Image (cartoon, rainbow, N blue to C red; front, side, top):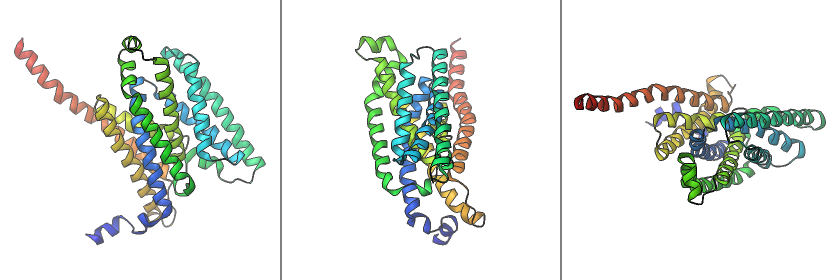
Length: 301
């Protein structure tokens, strides 16, 4: 048994400090993104989640330029973008897409400027790759607990927003009559989404952050429309993708003669495959539910 495990998992894997940090931070990001991602899908804000991921690259590149914490940079710009989306007055789908596109364009423009200044005015090397595609194995150890605390605060916020957000999605008028401000609930959801996107950007990079937010949640919502079950499935899929991606990236050093492949590639590949698998599973579940209903209807007729 131990010999078999030794072939699959090099014993240095869990003993590595960089791996431990990657597992902790990546796992925290996966859980937060899964929980918030389900509500993002149900609200129809998938494009907004993608936009916040790209816009957060401006914060990451600014952090290298100013010499501040990348967590602060990603969180700051993503948070500003989230507030901007809400207060641009996104009430209808068309307005939402237009506002999201405007914020996305502005954020990418700032990111291009900051990355240019990073390469021309500072001695920072590899900033663009780290911001855009992440680097879990070089994640600063002093940031792991602030990242975990950020994840904990975001989860606590979603626990508070759970019922008001569900009611606002199902029946906004009823939510208003019960004293719930749908505008503030929507704003708080977007700000919490910004925190999830920032953690995802730190883990797999700004370009691929939306995959971690939308992918596991999208697959889970395909399988079940019940929020609690969908959240549970999304968390399982997200953790499997992140932890599996970290393991595969670590092991790829031995697979390819010392040329390890990036963590973000493996994470996104697992997410993509899990989403593909959810499509036939959704169809199979639908047939299992629909067939008895059809039989009962025919019998009653």
